Length: 310
Length: 310
Image 1: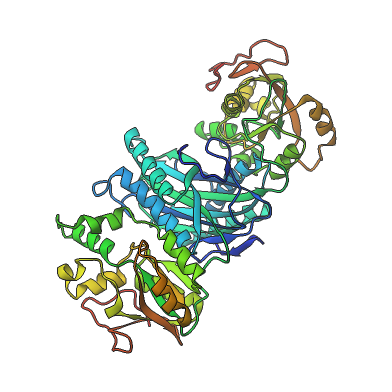
Image 2: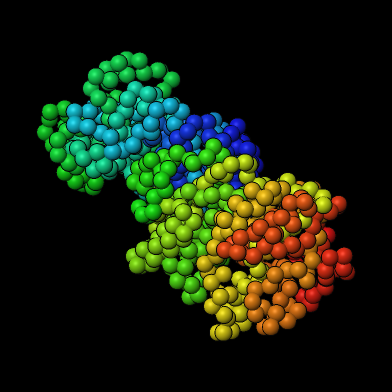
């Protein structure tokens, strides 16, 4: 698709039958993710450029969740025949710019025309420079759960749009339409000895349940420790915790670490990274449990937390 | 998507944020290709299992065209909500079986539900075990053009379907709905010193024009040397050459080699591989020219050869 922004290791780039690549490290990471118009984005709500940004960010986030670096991506686009060329170029620009921010390029792709929704599949390739990728299955009982950044802005934006609210803050909106992959944070968590890690695409409770299931432990989360997006509590009151815990598309990282690694990591955490906070722990049993605070009672909210299953 | 058929180098497979892979050789090859319902296949004409076979074969063919080996693939599927589970499983079975035939597995993917056509994007990853990948840009004046297999069966099937012909031979039909990537042939051509290579997805003339443009040479093809699918001339007469030269989706390989490498390669070509034939040469100038035979006059067919531009 795009000829711009080549990765240094890309020895054959766009225009040939396949891309050829000399990875910067022995272990290669690869993930593929699809955005579908009307499901993952709506043209009336975000620009084609932002669709490109999101397609890259949501795919690169999967490599961040392994503690990896991204090197390049391939793009497969299915475009309705009436798509204006300017929109195609704007999507491409968003992809190339978002990739460049992560130190990556676009290495080729495939474009089809078909009646139906616009479909954008981005495959992101990268490496783990040293050590092993952090899987979701390595968590152990007693590990502390750490979370990057804050939660709820993307879900609050969707809720605002649904309610016809024209005053959704720009900072919330940009979290939904142009998520940033937490590449540097993932690398730092891997280097500090993260035992399990995932990115939050389907919501904290559901994604935490994936760690619980794969690691064969229970996950305990503390509602009073969940970092809420700025202004979320003011606008939504207690419902803010529901948005933070059950809302999706935050693309923050949730990682488990042994207790003895956590204190030092929190002290040494560099200020240019997204803030890192302790939000829970792994324990015996299975499933996910949201408590009011560490050692507190079960957390209850109106409407329930759809994804809780403990 | 599928948990079956893992590649030996796949250290983290389906179910995690990304796949982790230790490639069998330093140079990694990767290509992504999309099949769209109504454009690349129709449900009334081929089974879901065959759609899986085709999605794999057409993607793996891109790696064959670099002289590479395939190791695994990732699948991104967008399915209409009413898709029966049995159809999803059949697509998956086709993908896994076709991959296994090429010595590869499925390493994960992404499934979305959306109103619209079924969209299947397969990203295939592999390696070049020794030497360099064969690009489309390395052809040199004087090189001989070699072609694997035969041509026209896929185009003849499409033409038969369009005309409502219920007697399309099964052998032709299977070339369209379940193409086999010429992996072993591509490897042999690379090892013999192929200077340029591509797979025939858009038709011989158009794909040859890509070699001509990228290699900055002219391509000369000889109509009397084009290997026609069995029975094609009997059914279509002189129009068979048009189907072979301008019809797409044959997924055969077209490669250029220095003259001195060709004789030995043709003699030593193993009988279990698809037949290899000399079909033309690279010369000075640019574009593609179809002659009646080597040194003969320009080839003319009724209806013209849409893609000829010399």
